[in-house]
Length: 143
Image (cartoon, rainbow, N blue to C red):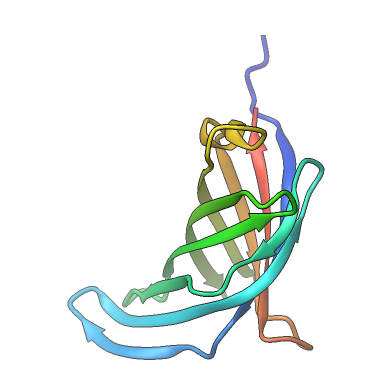
């Protein structure tokens, strides 16, 4: 029996962000904050907009690894507000490029989007878009 997980697309989000605010060095590395200002998302079972007001708290460790901890809300077309907690690890390897993978938790009220509360979700983040101060986040359900 093959128990290798498969991934199913949940949504792709374009998340608009403000410029990075440097918060200074702490004992674990450089602290940064990026405010989330809006955006949109779309997938097979849901679509809508990213609400302004969230933030991405970042830690740049001495070894160069970046740990991102984003908390924000998205509103679906039917008006449901979802809370997204996205924890991302960004690793840049010389000659191999950038990798940004994440674990995503989504909290939803009971109803048509309640399945998100039990879903095991992972994501991949892409760097800022050239034409827009935004990041692209693709989220998948593990099955």
